[in-house]
Image (cartoon, rainbow, N blue to C red; front, side):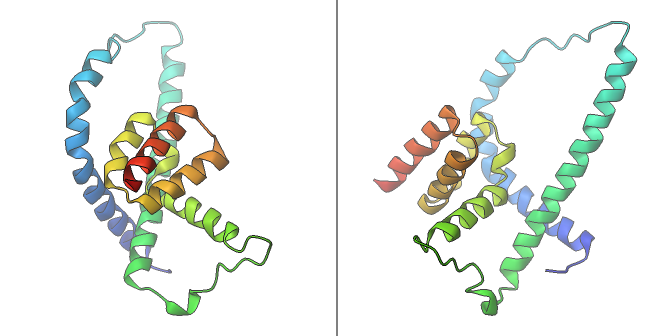
Length: 166
């Protein structure tokens, strides 16, 4: 969709705000454990403090750029859902031995990006799982197996998939 950047960012921000509002009860439930496990907030005093400060500024600038890109991508997806185009329904056809393989891979990628899966840690995934349906959990499991196969993530996704199936 060729929407203006401010509209894409606004739509992405609205979707993100709705997602975060949904996750708030789960995050509040684990807040005491996170506070207790947080390391001391004592700043290091050293000769290379200026170098570290410059690195932190650069890292924050890059993170802001990544966040803006993620918001724009979410906005694109939200706007595309609003303006669905039926002419592109067969655009993801795959002609090989397993006709569904390419579509499943594409769906797994799209699902992972739509929910911000690549940026999640295990706690974030645990927060996200209650709001996902069986198909999305299965797509994220496919994505994880293809892109990292991290035991904690595959276990969480596998258990959630088993619970969703019952």
